[in-house]
Amino acid sequence: MKLSRRRFAILVIFAAPLLLFATAASPHKRTPNKPYLVFVGTYTNKTTSKGIYAYRFDPGTGKLSPLGVAAESEDPSFLAVHPSGKYLYAVNEIDHFGAQKSGAVSAFSIDHKTGKLALLNQAATQGAGPCHISLDKSGKFVLVANYDGGSVAVFPIREDGSVGPASAFVQHSGSSVNKERQEGPHAHWIETSPDNRFALAADLGLDKILIYRFNAVKGSVTPNDPPYAKLNPGSGPRHLAFHPNGKFAYVLTEMENSVTSFSYSAAKGSLSPLQTLSTLSSLRKDYSGPKEAAEIAVHPNGKFLYTSNRAGIDTVSAFSIDHVKGTLKLIDEFPTMGKTPRNFAIDPTGKFLLAANQESNNIVTFRIDSSTGRLMPTGDIVEAPAPVCITFVAAP
Image (tube, rainbow, N blue to C red; front, side, top):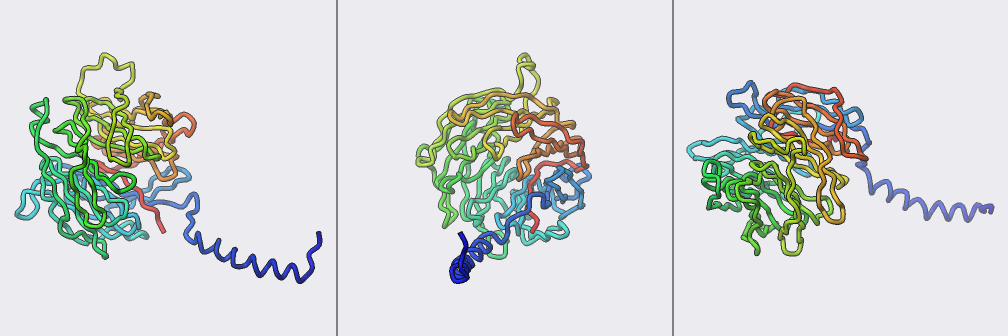
């Protein structure tokens, strides 16, 4: 059908605003292979590390290119990036900060062109040996777990990205069956729930996931009902990972080398156990050596889960996830081509897994098979002194 000039003009008049709206709705759409900044937290004590290191990551090839020291800092072990991409936060895993028996939280601004970090300020975490840090979903608060102090704390983020005085602090109490490692509380991880209504904390010393109601306006925490979920005695819960659908959560135990699957009630903030599996393959069924599982992550597609195994095992275990039941099935273990994989991270595209081998001072990149979840080394290995944590930042 031919359009008259009049009808054509009318169509243009009506279509133009729609085109403008479509353009304005996605002005910052990211190109598929645009590079990312990668920041690596490290241990500086008794190592050659000077602090936090920066890299450039190519999501098209999986190549990691060193940019050098991003910021000198003492034992900046674990990192978290603000949702805006403007700021980075680190816990300084130390026992004394100033005159206090405490670790510290450091706030930095990010220079996306150079990968350099500028220190904004520091604050005492009010407990010794902080080992984990995260941000709430609104990006208004920093949450910290103090391992040696056995406590958790929350800090507001000011408009300039710096951290203010603590808005909440909770001292855990109690112990568990292993008198050497569980003589008291050891908070190892803390993060808010997908809907930001609860804060969950894994305490290795108590064999519990403590659950708090989180006030996202005040940054306060109060015990939930139920106040915790229990893990096997002596298992030592270390980290937790939520499934992208928010219905399931997975807890990695350091001392048992196991993963416990939970169904998660968003309404109640409660965890109900479904299954517990070893992170080790059947080939290790008679294994009686030390067990030190370290990291856990669910793939962005929700089909796979990964954990790392240290203590001379030095592998990443891959699991498939039943998307209906939330249960796991071990796929295989994959050597990390280094020693002591304390941490790993899946890149934002979901195509690569980067393993941080703390004691061999390197980061090894693996390609993730999107169909099977299996890992294949890309051949890319970069030096990193005592790497502890890997985090990605989208470059503008």
